[in-house]
Image (cartoon, rainbow, N blue to C red; front, side, top):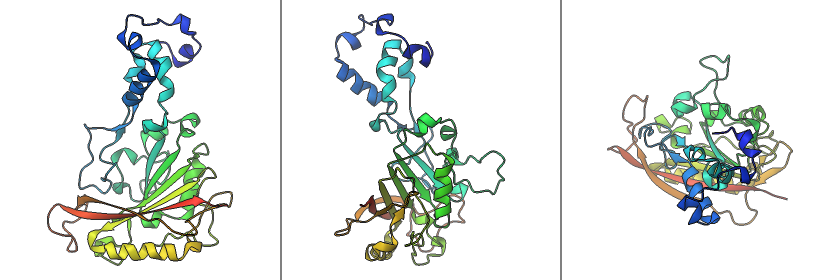
Length: 301
């Protein structure tokens, strides 16, 4: 097949019209594009599922994300029609997930260190996967949503700032921060939940100037559901302390009137990799209920 540069310079008259193909003679362009979009969409790799007892297994993150681009090799006509759909908003490729904290708390394909970094150096950077390290500025600029899974200790202004400054072309519209059950301080000892990531009134910048929506997702287990509700109430009762600043000084805040808190639940593991065994404060069996609360902050004014 010709290179991308060569194909982009070709006129359609120089490409075989594929009149012998039912795909082109039977289906209208709109239907072909719908088919291409489905074929090029991201999907969890069924051949490499994440272990259920891993710290990073959860709904939506059950395996590494994969894209099958073999469709683009079928012929030049398909390539010309479908290549623009690789970064379609529905493809899943415009969203990227990252993990901050201990490298054992993240998927194997997100444990890359920066060149020259020591074995204990933090890996809280955007180049933590081979996929991301292959991105050029053009690909980074296509990312519209970033999801960050962070242990509590790593969730601070300096981490946000260095993360986004490392790749200036990464300018997402939406940033989502998830604090999992195992990200809270001393969850192993069953200590009460304490959220210590409030940006504060005079905090430094956290988010890129492109960010218009910031989503905070907080998770715990069913036995601490009441504590999680109290932590969320502390946020909604102290809105001035929970305004997330962008690098240009503008802030993302909760609604001034009624704050909508979304809830969802899922069944997850009672034990985890690299742990000594069962935890006394966990129920018996292999699964327990996880409770999640979601708050949305938007650019105000």
